[in-house]
Amino acid sequence: MRHIDQLPETADVVVIGAGIVGCASAFFLSRTGRSPVVIERSDAVASATTSVSAHAIRCQFAEPENITQTTESLDIYENFRNVIGDPSAQIDLTQNGYLFASTDEADLAPFRDRVARQQSLGVTDVELLSGDDIRYRFPWMSDEIVVGSFRQRDGWIDSGLAANHFLDASGAPIALETAVTAVETSANRVTGVLTSSGRIVTSTVVLAAGPFSPDISPEPLPVARWRRHRIIVEADERIPQDAPMTIDANTGAHWRPHAGGALMAWAQPETDRPATWPVERDESWPDLILRSDRGIGRLCPFWNEITPDLTPDRYLFTAGQYTVTPDHKPLIGPANDIEGLYLNTGYSGHGIMGSPSGSRLLADVLAGSVRSADNPFHPGRFAAGTKPPDVEKIVL
Image 1 (cartoon, rainbow, N blue to C red):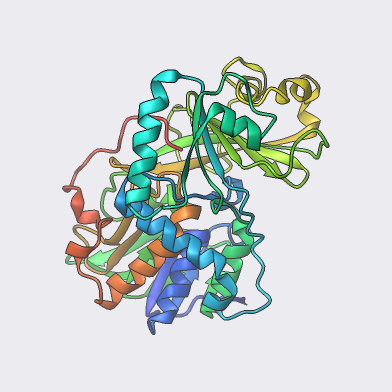
Image 2 (cartoon, helix red, strand yellow):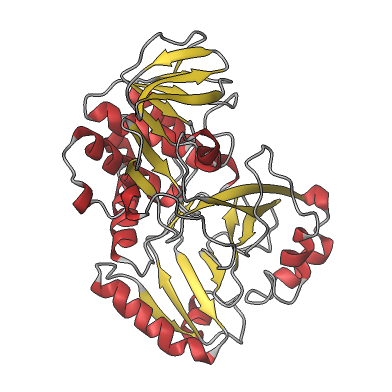
């Protein structure tokens, strides 16, 4: 990785943000002949929002554009060493699958319809499972479950490793501990980037700063910031390490194995929070997911034996943010009003899943090989002044 202490006077492209989205942007930009410079406010790559994600990827969506994006991303992760040209690269891809499960008989038809739609859109290996099917494969699941869907190829990665590999393979220099204070413009065109370490003259900026993007952008973005919590539980032999990502479709609580223990989260709508770092935690949240009747033990009763003894010294409790657009899909491509400003943000909680494909798309848009009409994530789909969404919907 090419760390720089002094900013160049000029740059072909400035990528703002060195999370997985920014690093993937730098990589795919370099593959189209561009020479990006990456600016990151933190002291390390992928150390903010990326580091507190669930690091997961699935292709079980209902919208064709989301399926196309995550299918391409998963293919990139499955072939990561060949894609970046490094036979030693390791991202710890684990394909234990993704399981959505419900205890509500009213979900029988919606699950059947959703799986049929996914299969018709190319996710042919997603399965509709009965409660008995689920318990046969995963004996620790609740007797109350009546229906679910499962796809074995879905799973998770170490997204910090992936981000660093993307950046290394791009050859792009990176300036750490460098805060962007303004994207400078003249006559509605990008002219430079002003930072805490000086100014870079450039006509092209890729804004990939996740929840910090609205504060940096010289034009308003239709992005809301939703706080999300996560717990990583220490190793315990009672936690099945061959389990899939297991999602309670009735509440949104979910968990997956992690390093002998587990990672758990809950996509509950919560109060919007500013993009400060670190994100302020709700200290009541661990009890909600660990011990309430809507928490992690509802579908997986073995957790009810473990959670009474889970004191704070036995788990890591963190909070991060989703950057959510009105249609819960990313902003990829040229900004509405500022020429030379390109967006790669607003992944609505799916940044790990979407960033490889989204960044490839961004690079192709910037290179002129993809038209706006062929880009389902074009920022122009929202009129200028579109308001961010209210915090009202569970997003998984």
